[in-house]
Length: 228
Image 1 (cartoon, rainbow, N blue to C red):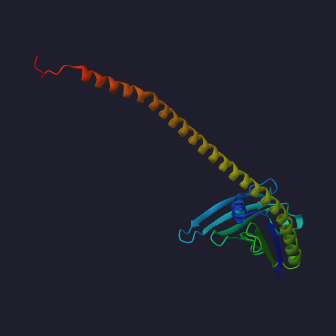
Image 2 (cartoon, helix red, strand yellow; image 1 turned 180 degrees about the horizontal axis):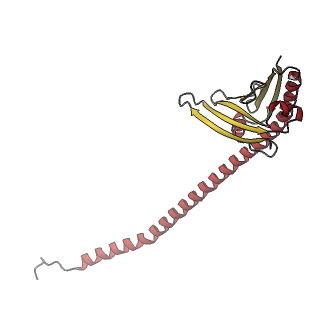
Image 3 (cartoon, rainbow, N blue to C red; image 1 turned 90 degrees about the vertical axis):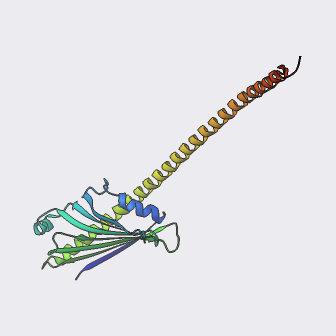
């Protein structure tokens, strides 16, 4: 019989920051067992704005000797499907193992959604189902995997918090850089305008003087048609 575990956690950050951080939380020194994460496909629906992508995750952890003798390898391959719905502010990640499926089945569903009680927070739900069919050690194997799931979930929450802060800091720095650039351009434009206005003030009296001198010269010239 499968074993289940559900964990809920509230991130006191906007859903947009949490969903962005989810894509960027690995690699992390907190989880050296996650060797690589490769994006296999990515698809964006231009009508709904929903993003779908698939990933291949390779992990290698400290597997106990009794389990290693059954699995025969320390590396685990996982397939993950991610769906991001920015309109409804829901992000869902569904993960399952690709190898050892005849021995062990691990299914995980993670959901990030806008918190129902505070729109500036994100409600995170993480569910795991572990199933084994190995006679004699099935329950022991399921219990071990669930214990590992709970331990890794704690590390994952810390990684997420750190990554969210990093995402927010980068956004603030980008905004500050934009403001600095805009202010610089505005200042240069004002200086150019002031310089052009100053030049115009210097030239205008000269033009007026030339016009006055020209008129005076025309008035003092004898009329060639006047009889002597």
